[in-house]
Length: 305
Image 1 (tube, helix red, strand yellow):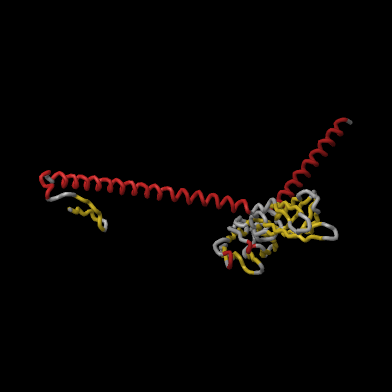
Image 2 (tube, rainbow, N blue to C red; image 1 turned 45 degrees about the horizontal axis):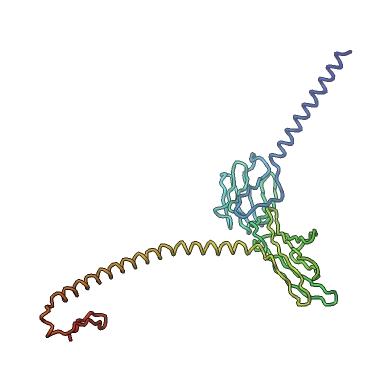
Protein backbone atom coordinates (compact mmCIF):
# COMPACT_ATOMS: atom_id res chain seq x y z
CA UNK A 1 0.00 0.00 0.00
CA UNK A 2 3.01 2.33 0.57
CA UNK A 3 4.14 2.19 -3.08
CA UNK A 4 0.86 3.51 -4.57
CA UNK A 5 0.97 6.39 -2.08
CA UNK A 6 4.50 7.26 -3.25
CA UNK A 7 3.48 7.10 -6.88
CA UNK A 8 0.43 9.22 -6.16
CA UNK A 9 2.56 11.81 -4.37
CA UNK A 10 5.06 11.86 -7.24
CA UNK A 11 2.29 12.30 -9.79
CA UNK A 12 0.75 15.17 -7.84
CA UNK A 13 4.11 16.92 -7.47
CA UNK A 14 4.85 16.54 -11.18
CA UNK A 15 1.45 17.93 -12.05
CA UNK A 16 1.97 20.97 -9.80
CA UNK A 17 5.39 21.68 -11.32
CA UNK A 18 3.95 21.42 -14.82
CA UNK A 19 1.15 23.83 -13.98
CA UNK A 20 3.68 26.22 -12.43
CA UNK A 21 5.85 26.19 -15.56
CA UNK A 22 2.83 26.80 -17.78
CA UNK A 23 1.73 29.72 -15.59
CA UNK A 24 5.20 31.27 -15.60
CA UNK A 25 5.39 30.96 -19.36
CA UNK A 26 1.98 32.56 -19.73
CA UNK A 27 2.80 35.51 -17.47
CA UNK A 28 6.18 35.97 -19.17
CA UNK A 29 4.56 36.18 -22.60
CA UNK A 30 1.95 38.58 -21.24
CA UNK A 31 4.60 40.81 -19.66
CA UNK A 32 6.65 40.79 -22.85
CA UNK A 33 3.80 42.50 -24.67
CA UNK A 34 2.45 44.48 -21.73
CA UNK A 35 1.63 47.97 -22.94
CA UNK A 36 1.11 50.77 -20.40
CA UNK A 37 -1.72 53.13 -21.21
CA UNK A 38 -0.06 56.14 -19.52
CA UNK A 39 3.63 57.12 -19.71
CA UNK A 40 5.43 59.94 -17.84
CA UNK A 41 8.72 61.36 -19.14
CA UNK A 42 11.00 64.36 -18.63
CA UNK A 43 11.82 67.06 -21.20
CA UNK A 44 14.77 65.86 -23.28
CA UNK A 45 14.17 62.16 -22.56
CA UNK A 46 13.57 59.37 -25.08
CA UNK A 47 10.39 57.29 -25.05
CA UNK A 48 9.64 54.00 -26.79
CA UNK A 49 6.01 53.02 -27.39
CA UNK A 50 5.42 49.29 -27.76
CA UNK A 51 2.93 47.87 -30.25
CA UNK A 52 2.19 45.04 -27.81
CA UNK A 53 2.30 42.30 -30.43
CA UNK A 54 4.83 40.27 -32.44
CA UNK A 55 5.49 41.64 -35.94
CA UNK A 56 4.65 38.38 -37.69
CA UNK A 57 1.66 38.72 -39.97
CA UNK A 58 1.70 42.54 -39.93
CA UNK A 59 2.23 44.14 -43.32
CA UNK A 60 0.93 47.64 -42.64
CA UNK A 61 1.17 49.61 -39.42
CA UNK A 62 0.56 53.19 -38.43
CA UNK A 63 1.40 55.40 -35.43
CA UNK A 64 -0.52 58.65 -34.91
CA UNK A 65 -0.29 61.56 -32.50
CA UNK A 66 -3.45 63.57 -31.87
CA UNK A 67 -4.90 61.79 -34.94
CA UNK A 68 -2.04 62.96 -37.19
CA UNK A 69 0.41 60.47 -38.72
CA UNK A 70 3.77 60.22 -36.97
CA UNK A 71 5.20 57.10 -38.65
CA UNK A 72 3.88 54.37 -40.91
CA UNK A 73 5.07 51.00 -42.17
CA UNK A 74 4.23 49.56 -45.56
CA UNK A 75 4.88 46.19 -47.18
CA UNK A 76 8.44 47.23 -48.00
CA UNK A 77 9.06 47.42 -44.20
CA UNK A 78 10.25 51.01 -44.38
CA UNK A 79 9.20 53.69 -41.92
CA UNK A 80 8.46 57.35 -42.58
CA UNK A 81 8.44 60.13 -39.98
CA UNK A 82 6.23 63.17 -40.43
CA UNK A 83 5.13 66.50 -38.97
CA UNK A 84 6.66 67.82 -35.73
CA UNK A 85 8.60 64.57 -35.11
CA UNK A 86 10.69 64.80 -38.26
CA UNK A 87 14.23 63.74 -37.35
CA UNK A 88 13.20 62.72 -33.82
CA UNK A 89 10.88 59.76 -34.39
CA UNK A 90 11.60 56.32 -35.81
CA UNK A 91 9.59 53.15 -36.29
CA UNK A 92 11.35 49.85 -35.67
CA UNK A 93 10.30 47.31 -38.36
CA UNK A 94 11.44 44.42 -36.14
CA UNK A 95 8.94 44.99 -33.31
CA UNK A 96 6.81 47.87 -34.69
CA UNK A 97 7.68 50.10 -31.72
CA UNK A 98 7.79 53.89 -32.06
CA UNK A 99 10.72 55.81 -30.54
CA UNK A 100 10.61 59.57 -30.00
CA UNK A 101 13.79 61.38 -28.93
CA UNK A 102 14.46 64.80 -27.39
CA UNK A 103 10.96 65.11 -25.97
CA UNK A 104 9.38 68.54 -25.53
CA UNK A 105 6.35 69.70 -23.58
CA UNK A 106 4.43 69.87 -26.87
CA UNK A 107 4.90 66.10 -27.35
CA UNK A 108 2.42 65.35 -24.56
CA UNK A 109 -0.80 63.81 -25.81
CA UNK A 110 -2.46 60.65 -27.11
CA UNK A 111 -0.56 58.20 -29.36
CA UNK A 112 -2.32 55.41 -31.22
CA UNK A 113 -1.06 52.32 -33.05
CA UNK A 114 -3.09 50.75 -35.86
CA UNK A 115 -2.48 47.42 -37.65
CA UNK A 116 -4.35 44.46 -39.12
CA UNK A 117 -3.93 42.64 -35.81
CA UNK A 118 -4.65 45.13 -33.03
CA UNK A 119 -4.87 48.77 -31.98
CA UNK A 120 -3.11 50.43 -29.02
CA UNK A 121 -3.71 53.78 -27.30
CA UNK A 122 -1.04 55.40 -25.08
CA UNK A 123 -1.17 58.78 -23.33
CA UNK A 124 2.18 60.53 -22.87
CA UNK A 125 2.83 63.23 -20.26
CA UNK A 126 6.08 65.18 -20.70
CA UNK A 127 7.18 67.13 -17.62
CA UNK A 128 9.68 69.96 -17.30
CA UNK A 129 12.50 69.85 -14.76
CA UNK A 130 11.35 71.81 -11.73
CA UNK A 131 12.95 74.90 -10.22
CA UNK A 132 12.15 76.40 -6.79
CA UNK A 133 8.84 78.29 -6.89
CA UNK A 134 8.48 82.06 -6.43
CA UNK A 135 6.61 83.23 -3.32
CA UNK A 136 4.72 86.50 -2.79
CA UNK A 137 3.05 87.64 0.43
CA UNK A 138 0.58 90.37 1.47
CA UNK A 139 -1.33 91.08 4.68
CA UNK A 140 -4.45 92.79 6.00
CA UNK A 141 -4.87 94.01 9.59
CA UNK A 142 -8.16 93.05 11.23
CA UNK A 143 -8.87 95.55 14.01
CA UNK A 144 -11.83 93.62 15.40
CA UNK A 145 -9.85 90.43 15.96
CA UNK A 146 -6.47 92.16 16.32
CA UNK A 147 -4.86 89.79 13.84
CA UNK A 148 -3.21 89.74 10.42
CA UNK A 149 -4.69 87.87 7.48
CA UNK A 150 -1.72 86.68 5.43
CA UNK A 151 -2.24 86.00 1.71
CA UNK A 152 0.46 83.96 -0.03
CA UNK A 153 0.91 82.98 -3.68
CA UNK A 154 3.20 80.19 -4.92
CA UNK A 155 4.08 80.14 -8.62
CA UNK A 156 6.15 77.65 -10.59
CA UNK A 157 8.13 78.97 -13.57
CA UNK A 158 8.97 75.49 -14.89
CA UNK A 159 5.92 75.02 -17.09
CA UNK A 160 3.89 71.88 -17.58
CA UNK A 161 1.45 70.28 -15.19
CA UNK A 162 2.37 70.74 -11.53
CA UNK A 163 0.64 70.51 -8.15
CA UNK A 164 1.14 72.66 -5.05
CA UNK A 165 1.22 71.98 -1.31
CA UNK A 166 1.59 74.42 1.59
CA UNK A 167 3.05 73.38 4.93
CA UNK A 168 2.56 75.61 8.00
CA UNK A 169 2.49 74.71 11.71
CA UNK A 170 2.38 70.95 11.01
CA UNK A 171 -0.51 71.43 8.59
CA UNK A 172 -0.45 70.49 4.91
CA UNK A 173 -2.80 72.33 2.57
CA UNK A 174 -3.18 71.94 -1.20
CA UNK A 175 -3.32 74.69 -3.81
CA UNK A 176 -1.08 77.48 -5.04
CA UNK A 177 -2.76 80.15 -2.86
CA UNK A 178 -3.08 80.26 0.89
CA UNK A 179 -4.71 82.56 3.46
CA UNK A 180 -3.67 82.27 7.08
CA UNK A 181 -4.39 84.23 10.26
CA UNK A 182 -1.63 85.13 12.72
CA UNK A 183 -1.52 87.49 15.72
CA UNK A 184 1.15 89.93 16.90
CA UNK A 185 1.87 87.94 20.05
CA UNK A 186 2.69 84.82 18.03
CA UNK A 187 6.24 83.94 17.12
CA UNK A 188 7.50 84.01 13.54
CA UNK A 189 5.53 81.69 11.27
CA UNK A 190 7.23 79.76 8.47
CA UNK A 191 5.29 78.90 5.31
CA UNK A 192 6.73 76.28 2.93
CA UNK A 193 5.40 75.79 -0.59
CA UNK A 194 6.24 72.58 -2.46
CA UNK A 195 5.65 72.23 -6.19
CA UNK A 196 5.78 68.71 -7.60
CA UNK A 197 4.99 66.51 -10.57
CA UNK A 198 5.62 62.87 -11.51
CA UNK A 199 9.39 63.33 -11.86
CA UNK A 200 10.32 65.40 -8.80
CA UNK A 201 9.60 68.30 -6.48
CA UNK A 202 11.04 71.67 -5.39
CA UNK A 203 10.32 73.84 -2.34
CA UNK A 204 10.67 77.43 -1.16
CA UNK A 205 9.89 78.94 2.23
CA UNK A 206 9.16 82.33 3.75
CA UNK A 207 9.01 83.38 7.41
CA UNK A 208 6.65 86.19 8.45
CA UNK A 209 5.51 87.95 11.61
CA UNK A 210 2.48 90.15 12.24
CA UNK A 211 3.58 93.55 13.63
CA UNK A 212 0.17 94.79 14.67
CA UNK A 213 -1.99 97.66 13.46
CA UNK A 214 0.73 99.06 11.21
CA UNK A 215 -0.34 96.30 8.83
CA UNK A 216 3.24 95.30 8.13
CA UNK A 217 4.72 91.84 7.89
CA UNK A 218 8.36 91.20 8.53
CA UNK A 219 9.92 88.94 5.94
CA UNK A 220 12.99 87.24 7.39
CA UNK A 221 13.43 84.51 4.80
CA UNK A 222 12.78 85.35 1.13
CA UNK A 223 12.21 82.83 -1.60
CA UNK A 224 15.00 80.36 -2.23
CA UNK A 225 14.98 81.53 -5.83
CA UNK A 226 17.05 84.56 -4.75
CA UNK A 227 19.96 82.38 -3.65
CA UNK A 228 21.00 81.32 -7.18
CA UNK A 229 20.69 84.97 -8.27
CA UNK A 230 23.04 86.14 -5.49
CA UNK A 231 25.47 83.36 -6.30
CA UNK A 232 25.44 84.35 -9.96
CA UNK A 233 26.21 87.98 -9.09
CA UNK A 234 29.15 86.96 -6.90
CA UNK A 235 30.58 84.63 -9.55
CA UNK A 236 30.13 87.28 -12.24
CA UNK A 237 31.97 89.87 -10.13
CA UNK A 238 34.88 87.49 -9.60
CA UNK A 239 35.12 86.81 -13.33
CA UNK A 240 35.19 90.55 -14.09
CA UNK A 241 37.98 91.06 -11.55
CA UNK A 242 40.00 88.21 -13.06
CA UNK A 243 39.60 89.71 -16.54
CA UNK A 244 40.66 93.19 -15.39
CA UNK A 245 43.80 92.08 -13.54
CA UNK A 246 45.87 91.42 -16.71
CA UNK A 247 44.84 94.82 -18.11
CA UNK A 248 45.91 96.61 -14.93
CA UNK A 249 49.21 94.73 -14.90
CA UNK A 250 49.91 95.62 -18.52
CA UNK A 251 49.02 99.27 -17.87
CA UNK A 252 51.38 99.44 -14.91
CA UNK A 253 54.13 97.80 -16.94
CA UNK A 254 53.74 100.37 -19.74
CA UNK A 255 53.72 103.21 -17.18
CA UNK A 256 56.96 101.96 -15.65
CA UNK A 257 58.52 101.78 -19.09
CA UNK A 258 57.48 105.38 -19.82
CA UNK A 259 58.90 106.53 -16.46
CA UNK A 260 62.22 104.89 -17.24
CA UNK A 261 62.29 106.56 -20.65
CA UNK A 262 61.52 109.97 -19.13
CA UNK A 263 64.25 109.49 -16.54
CA UNK A 264 66.69 108.55 -19.29
CA UNK A 265 65.77 111.67 -21.27
CA UNK A 266 66.16 113.85 -18.15
CA UNK A 267 69.62 112.43 -17.55
CA UNK A 268 70.57 113.20 -21.15
CA UNK A 269 69.27 116.75 -20.76
CA UNK A 270 71.26 117.22 -17.54
CA UNK A 271 74.38 116.01 -19.27
CA UNK A 272 73.77 118.51 -22.10
CA UNK A 273 73.26 121.34 -19.65
CA UNK A 274 76.41 120.38 -17.79
CA UNK A 275 78.28 120.47 -21.08
CA UNK A 276 77.01 124.02 -21.71
CA UNK A 277 78.10 125.14 -18.28
CA UNK A 278 81.49 123.59 -18.70
CA UNK A 279 82.03 125.38 -21.98
CA UNK A 280 81.81 128.77 -20.27
CA UNK A 281 85.10 130.26 -19.12
CA UNK A 282 85.59 132.21 -15.91
CA UNK A 283 86.93 135.04 -17.91
CA UNK A 284 83.61 135.47 -19.65
CA UNK A 285 81.98 136.81 -16.51
CA UNK A 286 82.06 140.32 -17.87
CA UNK A 287 79.88 139.27 -20.72
CA UNK A 288 77.56 136.87 -18.86
CA UNK A 289 76.58 137.85 -15.38
CA UNK A 290 73.92 135.13 -15.00
CA UNK A 291 72.88 132.03 -16.81
CA UNK A 292 69.14 131.40 -16.37
CA UNK A 293 67.19 128.36 -17.56
CA UNK A 294 63.46 128.71 -18.13
CA UNK A 295 60.77 126.56 -19.70
CA UNK A 296 58.48 128.01 -22.28
CA UNK A 297 55.65 125.99 -23.85
CA UNK A 298 57.28 122.72 -22.76
CA UNK A 299 60.66 123.49 -24.40
CA UNK A 300 63.83 124.09 -22.45
CA UNK A 301 65.24 127.56 -23.27
CA UNK A 302 68.55 128.92 -22.17
CA UNK A 303 68.28 132.63 -21.41
CA UNK A 304 71.37 134.67 -20.95
CA UNK A 305 71.22 137.95 -19.03
